[in-house]
Image (cartoon, rainbow, N blue to C red):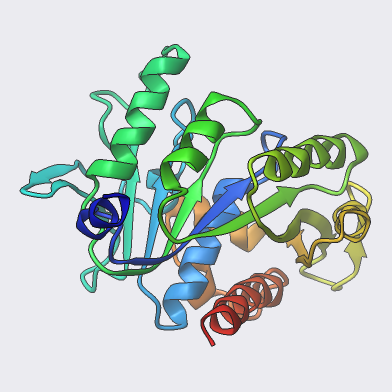
Length: 272
């Protein structure tokens, strides 16, 4: 019965599902989700992003589609497409709010119900990757998301941290969450790892360095790489531009491309 339900599901055409997690807010989960999606698209993949950060939906703004709305079809909700090729599709509560400044003041059960509806009712079609951008923490939304996605092609989780000890400590708790939920950790990304001066190319470690790599080594999980602070990356996210296409010579580009390549390599090994 469960297999029949899975075949009829709106997620039946999704080959791989990735969760982007962190125990800490403000570490750049939405940034990593956005740039990973763009990198995978430039590798010829079809990608969807499900934004389950219900109180702080950033994904629509980062793709400059915040004024779009969601439509209904026979299968459920049609996601918002970023381009004419429909190579990146998005779903977020940001598309459902009447006013972008509206606060989502909901208790846990209502949040959980919407997450389950997102999982069941969005007509994604055929996707190579569905990236799930989550809020910080290890609470109701995370449990609901993992449990709702478990019957499908849930590849695992990417954990995002910044170099400081406070952030690393919170992400250590996220590792414990993954272990308790029996969720595979694909690796750790250290974001905001140093600032490369655009004039002299010298790297200054504003928030220290190496915390994410040390945590990965201690936990026995892959370290996917360090993404430096990059004004061009910040600018492209503010303006909804394709950083991967427009800034191939920037300091953050090699790190982001390397993270995406490791995900691709991991999926090809799994299917071979």
